[in-house]
Image 1 (cartoon, rainbow, N blue to C red):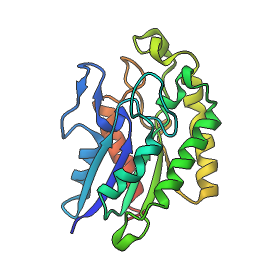
Image 2 (cartoon, helix red, strand yellow):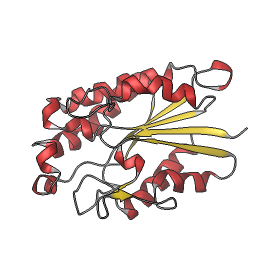
Image 3 (cartoon, rainbow, N blue to C red):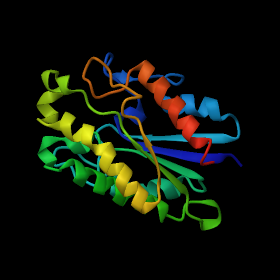
Length: 212
């Protein structure tokens, strides 16, 4: 049986390409690049959904609250060894009125839920890695996504990893910060481009060497 990893995230886990407005193919998405690096012993499950939040119900779109979907998602892929959670970008939206610390609290809540879901081998709990997403570039507001995202998203996004690192330390959950290592694209400034996916796959893989 292959050792299964679930990557639970938003459009940057799904593989949204801001240039084509479609999905990056396999071989470009960071999840598939990670699978290639890990080899035949592992299966990497892509559970990315555009617009997904950690714990917030979006009044405009259905089914985006990750907290509600996490349990059935993990149980459907059981048995699994590891859950990688990368959320927080959508939680910065102005209409949710969350502070950067509130967003970190939501991610801490969903990571704790993952750690207590009996989706591992023989009903054990899986390991969890929380990844702080790359910060949104301040230029996002002048692009088409600015209308929907609202103001201040870049500021909250930049502050998120510091709060997350503190909360994951308290929770004793594995943590990886991408700030300063993985850039967002130069189109909408809130999605990864091909190079960003490649860099993310590399640093996640290096982190997993110490976890798996």
